[in-house]
Length: 308
Length: 308
Image (cartoon, rainbow over all chains, first blue to last red; front, side, top):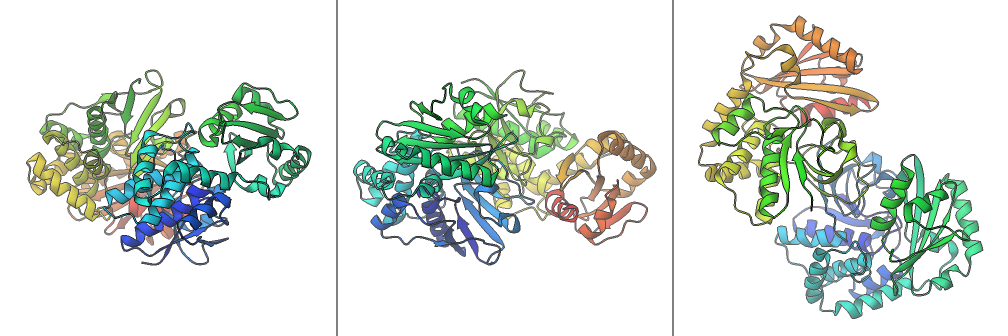
């Protein structure tokens, strides 16, 4: 059997990078020839986790069809969030926890999606189903992914299954989940050295909603005011992106990881969708979304409905 | 929590009907309020299985949004193979073993697809994962589904996992799989009392292939000549269906369950796709496909590629 590449989405976050590493590890234990790669370099939070557990970051690829004919997707399924030449390879497996859209195969596939907070929580089940032992550093990476995606269990996407998995994994990883988790989140929330381009692409995803294309970029911070100090320059960059990529709406979500609220900055022709979606009005292109931290559960479905 | 309906595809076969019953049983054991329904009445093969194990056929529904807001799909995912008002309800789960296409959700979903021969094989795993005991009649239904979808393990879709599951299930069901299986297949292969309309809709599915719409109807028989005795009337009905439903291609697959070969009868504007797909020429609109028994694995991918 020829080699298969495993990777997560563009603008990789901690769940996407670690899930590729973790699932590749599991598949190798099952005797398969797989390699974890990534579609971008790890962000500061992910770097913290990789360094802490002494794991090397995956090789970054731009395309895959030049080296393999089959791939495994983790933590995503939508074509526009995947590698550029995804249409030229066969997707043999998907392990994911997002909505399913813009995804199609011509052959039967192994598809494992569950409405849990994190891909790592599903991977943790797969280790059990295959009765494969979890080494300390692999447990640490899965724990990091759960803490990252759930903002230390605060996100509404977080389920009892995620918390139970995190507790088991923390024991194997030999860390205090709360102490380690807050340090990791703070490492990721330090945006002081980021350019505006970096802020807007750190964790950005594109969605087809009805007939519109919507970009939603999110940053975690302990100081939203600091991020918004440069609002006019941020807006200029967003407007440029909208023009270049023909977007209908760009929503920049600044999430306060201490208060678990978000401020959104929305621009684009379909900016009117914000009011029906969230019941708030934009002032100076901004609005506060109280208790909103999850793009997947609190932002994408509301905007999708408003734009359909 | 309000009730959820579980159902398989239109023109139901044994795997689709029994999977709805079996998964509804499992979910009820897990404390959920679910009901198995079906999008059509059981065929003769399925009736044989239900009667043998003393299980009542599910209630037939035309629409679902009038009674529930959420549904679980088994043995299919493609919108055009599902209930008419599928777009008006939320799909919360899918258990399937087919390609994924024309399927989209706005929220995360539980999606469990594996490239095995039968949905029942995946359901068998789920009983084990949830540590729920399998009663005799539920085992019998899962066994029937595996025998049906694999033509008693002869189909190329059949995997070692399907055979292993069937062996375990035959023990619980207290039947000899070969003896019971052949009797069940023969009950389904008796087409003598079928009208032409019934033959063409018994196990018919619609596929979007590239920009074309293709209908593939399949019957199992021990006497293909008997089915084709009425070829000119069959062709008249097919041509009518093509006109009414604006189809680009209609392929009627007559599978000999004793020799494991098929004869296809193909009509429609895109009939030229048959040659590149299967390397055979049509004579009198017919061609023999040696060793071809699986629509999913041997017919759909080949035609999809030829039409893309």
